[in-house]
Length: 162
Image (cartoon, rainbow, N blue to C red; front, side, top):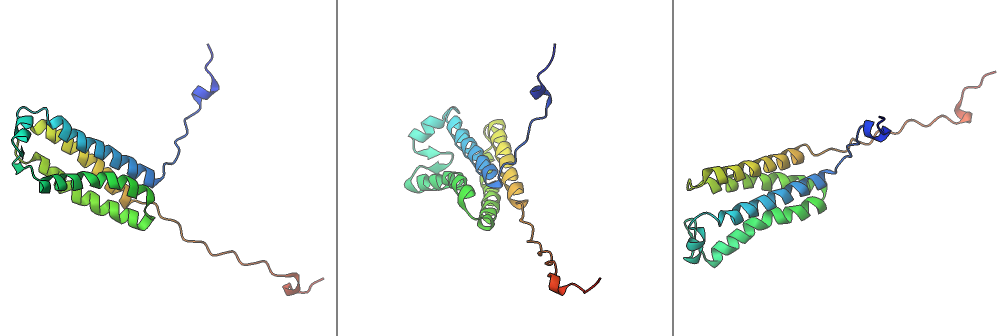
């Protein structure tokens, strides 16, 4: 039995632009962030607390809702910004926001309930934030423009010879 030649040749690993990698990481982070909260509603008593106007120890108010919306907007906006900002601003924005989100995400472990669930969510979020930080920190640099080679001398500038 013979194998087709295409099956034996190595697959090409195309270069993915840094902006695309960052946008993909922020997309993954956003989905995970939302799903940790959404699936947390299955925790016994969570819905009853919400119906009674509480989330964790916080009163549900407009301030709470605006704060929660602002927090969830960060990864959503970073998807767009990672694809559209110029390189220098893009790198700085990714470094700053990913760094600021680390302690914010760690807050999910406060309270000590469902440590495996929230611990797993936090661990994956931290891996994604570490990927974002590493990708932004190691942003490829454009090599400096090389100096042009000296022009060949014109015939009139060549030494006279026989």
